[in-house]
Length: 115
Image 1 (cartoon, rainbow, N blue to C red):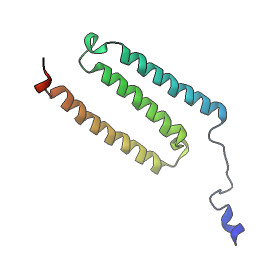
Image 2: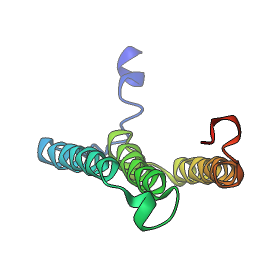
Image 3: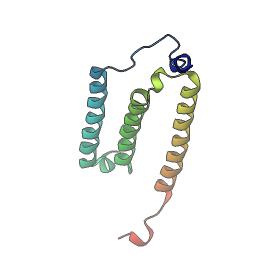
Image 4: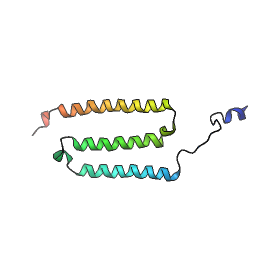
């Protein structure tokens, strides 16, 4: 009886999603994003582009890295459509939270800490 249920989840198809070289490529992408975030933090984009540009670029890089982690390390790329729907819904919810945060950031005055 244990033999019957042992391979029920297999369904006769076994494909390897990620290989070691693919994991290394994703790791290098994530490491490159971390280095890029470091150099963006050292430069003054707020003075050159618009106030909050450093934060915007850092959040964009973090969002890209989060997408790589979800797609490849969490195997969403090879998952059924319902998992894709929940992943996209979570991105949408995160975008709403970032929009409210940036709205508060751009409209808040310095208050007590102004010079």
